Image (cartoon, helix red, strand yellow):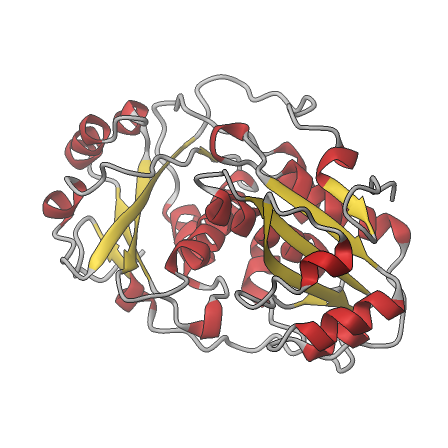
Length: 170
Length: 170
């Protein structure tokens, strides 16, 4: 899938089909995060790739805003080095890369966070030097996914040409 | 360009050819930011799309870490609503989308930030209710861009399988 098409069509998917994600697709999703650029190339992130059902269920129970993680084929828990200055920004870029790479292969996802994720640390053995930043559950959508217009503010409301307040008109 | 290919090959570009970016490409770059998902769909961002040389020069003079902005064909200044709780994360996702959308059409970019950008506000008329988060200069690369291996930590160092510390092996 072309990059712009992926960005234009990607929707949050919170209900997953009972269907595994092929290993090479999982690999590309993980590599998409790994290969993402970061401030000063510090890569202040760690990705825990969870595919065992029992662990997915426990993640779903812990993630208040994402109980559907229990039904995902895959979840990637993203942790940030506490010492990193731009960890939130860097990890957000990596997450966007992973979600787009998945979407390009028909795999939906959603961002589950941001807070109350400390309980995930003992479950996955994440050391104290990291913060758990997000859980991203992935899976093929349970229902066909539409490609309709997204609910967004008008383009001219969020984009200006040359100066703030002059609506961008392309 | 395929999504994974874009993620895999995208490099920071800091030297730009003296060549304009076609309007439809500029439009897609801006739309890529606009269409990106955000926490609770709040879209707490504003994109100021700068193409006037004089303003690009002034941005280059203000951005300590990105003087090369002066030579870019385009710069997008990303501002965040100060009231937003997840603005840094949301805007980082939008920036990743814009950089990937540009790269897919042969346009390079780099992230210039993070701090000392307050002086940009009067230049672009950005109101006090926003923080200037980043300047992203865009342009066709001045030199051919390699597609070599990126400098990254080993995959197993930043990605674990099932539990932190068990290197992910695909």
